[in-house]
Image 1 (cartoon, rainbow, N blue to C red):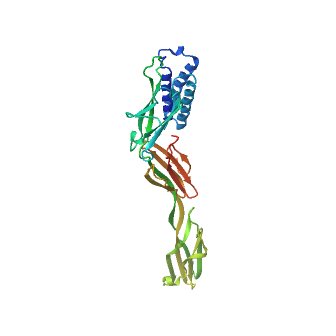
Image 2 (cartoon, rainbow, N blue to C red):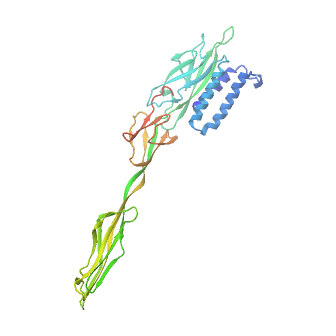
Image 3 (cartoon, helix red, strand yellow):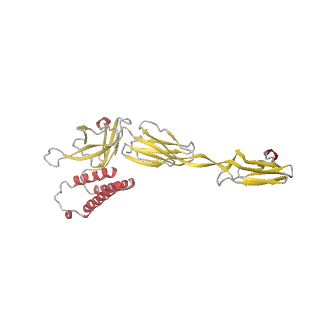
Length: 383
């Protein structure tokens, strides 16, 4: 917009400067004048290519147009408007008046009426007037009040110049038009998208193959085995147990298991989160006896894993008149992105943890308090 406004003023100033020479061919101009037209054409072509380029390109072109204008007014004797503000008209919730500042050269001449600014069929007299600057203060109500989306309003400046005739006559009127972008009463909205890390507990049951011990002819036998948890897991020592799968014995014709004094048990000396040992024993008290014992280990294995969890907060309204509210930054987040939608027209996706300054909104992280502020820009002096 700024580049367009400056280019528009340059074209209007060239039109005014050459009002008496519209029938001249390009070759009839001197080299300095030819350069001004060539530079203007090149800059306008560049602006057409830069519509989808980053903002910085538009600002650079704005500077180019301003430089060409400065070169032109060094040799023309006609009035020229170099720049004007504001580029954006603030919403009515911020201000009830709009100060319009116009800068240029030869903007006022003695012996004629002061310049006037017309907006929507209403004429306004200047509140400040010099040869190089004009200021107007107009009611905000003269501009539209869009609820969403930006709007455009035009204004026309009339500059009066002496007629140039020795017998007098009506003053010459020279016109310059302006285009203002009118901002809506609703600043926009924002949404915070977070990918957070949450701790998730996973568990799995370890059930070992049966371990057995057999002893015939008296005495006893013990079989031992140690088990680690699966990779990445540890044992939950409160949920560990042995299961006896078989317990048999015989003595002559007596097959009562009671003659088998064996058992399945955990070796308490080796019971840790990383290793558990068990023993299975078969024991009898006589040489004519026999015993057989089988058992296994059942133990719960646990681990804590990081789980990515997407969280969405919004959309939330952004209001011009409200002071910034803190947005809590999520602990242990992989990323936290703020999507800002301005005027229901412009979308920007920005990291919540780095400072960003948009045209109408500043993102201010406060790492110490783990929050970020979205601060609407309400200062319009230089816009």
